[in-house]
Amino acid sequence: MTTDSNKKLVEQLFKEVMNEKNLSFVDKSFAPNFKHHGIPGAQGGPAGFKATYQKFIDAFPDIQVHPEHFIAEGDLVATRGEMTGTNKGSFMGAAPAGKKFRIDYIDIWKVKDGKFTENWVSMDTTGIMTQVGLMPAHETA
Image 1 (cartoon, rainbow, N blue to C red):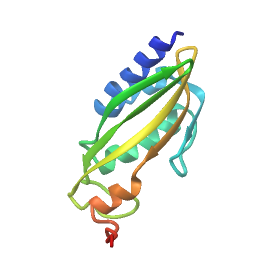
Image 2 (cartoon, rainbow, N blue to C red):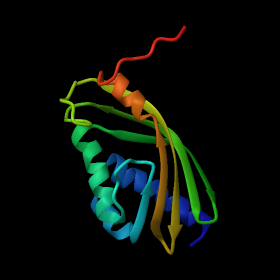
Image 3 (cartoon, one colour):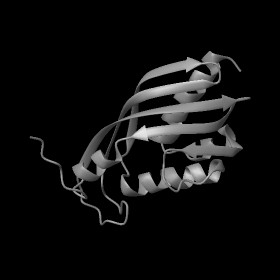
Image 4 (tube, rainbow, N blue to C red):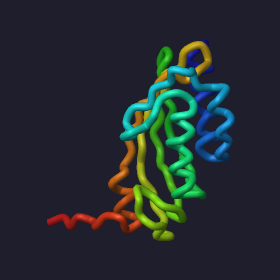
């Protein structure tokens, strides 16, 4: 696949899975040996990715991921953007707070033969926890 087709596949992933919550897209676009880096305890494979994202959907049913930049080179596609949602379900063992969050994220997707094989994600989980009231905000001097 070309760099442009890899980029289009990542764009489709964000539209279908992250925002429309069509988890069946994962079954056809993730390699069986998919590895998910950056989310503690995340399992591999399509089932592992779906289980991880389902936890976010359960905690934040209106979750949306808004990529602002896509940068592609070879078999890698990086995105940067923001994630938003409202805490209406249990998150990290805490009862729902009903509060909204907005954080920044950066991730990198590896694509081989039209399938996602790896993902590295860096997101502000502490920001989510602070904004929904699960963690006190730190005061700055």
